[in-house]
Amino acid sequence: MTLTRKIGFLLLLPVIGALATLSIFFALHTQTAEDAPVINLAGRQRLHAQQLLAYADRVRAGQEKDRAALIELTDLYERSLAVLEHGGEFMGQAFPPVPAAVLDEIAEIRQVWESQGAALRLIARRAVRAPGVEDAYRVAQANTPPLVAAADNMVTALTQRIQTLQRRTLNALLGSAGFNFLLLLAGIFITRQ
Image 1: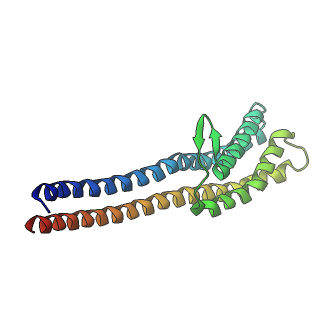
Image 2: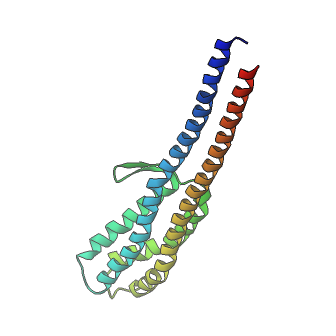
């Protein structure tokens, strides 16, 4: 091998290592960039679950103007839950479906929401003293803590997923650094020949 080829090969080796490192960073960025808006939306679900009960309290106390807000927030919660499950556009932003790692948490939210949504809609649409409204209010009160906890579990699962991706990326980067070191040793060996 001529000296020119040896030098060219030595210059090519760090480029190969840099491209490998760059692709690892790009993969992490792509995966975490998709999760960040989903985590934000899941956090909003937690907040909205608490707000829904507050609006139900106001309607129960006779605040008639809050009926429309309760229905609107209930519909908003339902739409955002559907976006979390299946992906789509919400509030002017596109969301991917949640990763498979958190489907159990979505199912938990959906299970609690079935009775919660029905109770809140009943509270919003019927008179305070109408039959079934007090029972619906008790259901809404009982379902709020599990609904908040389920949303919190989803945020935690998504955060853990990102941390796992970060650990994998760190391991891959350490492997890439080791590979680059081996390339350096190979380059030194080639130049001595």
